[in-house]
Amino acid sequence: IGLALPAAWVADRKGAAWTVFTCAAIFAVIALPSFMLLDAYPTSLAVTLPIVGILFAGISSGFGVVYLYTVELFPTAVRGTAVGICYNIGFSIFGGLAPMACEASLHILRLGPGFIFAFSGLVTAATVLCALIMKRKGWVTLTHVRPKPYFSSKRLLCGISDDHGKAGAVESLHMSDGSTVCSEDSE
Image (cartoon, rainbow, N blue to C red; front, side, top):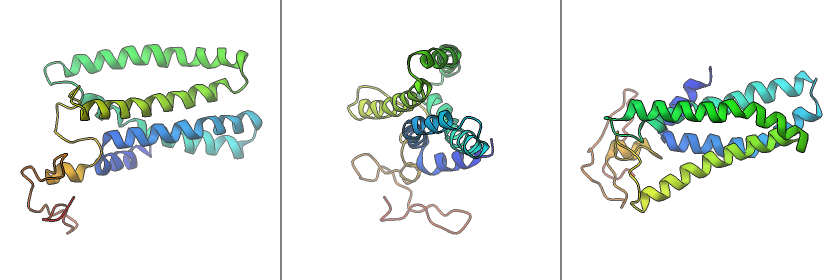
């Protein structure tokens, strides 16, 4: 819970999709080695606490941003219903079956849960990338909240378009700490 605020700050600076993609990619890379360590030293607090407490809790706090990402996928007329259906179906299928799948995978492969965790991070990262590719090709509209929410809030604030031109850009935006976010030459 303590890492949720830094994750929200990163999402505010970099965008919801960047945060979800980064956390998913990190999770895909560290899940199997972390599970291998847990499997090798199951009673060692020196191994268990850092892995469970820091790695998985830290990465999982970044996944809290996925709700910001999901909300923007639907127009306001159906947003509450659509997010509710997606969340509840996803949570019941994946959240409900994950413990059973991990337990069953132990009968097939000793490191089965590590592979399942790594695969889930890979699927999440690939989903964000596929969505961005489909948006770039004009196949889908990813957001109904704002025009450019995904990989840079600075680009959004400055009104910079995809073709690197300025579409109604703000001349300058002064922050409370005295810094300037947008200027004539900002990107």
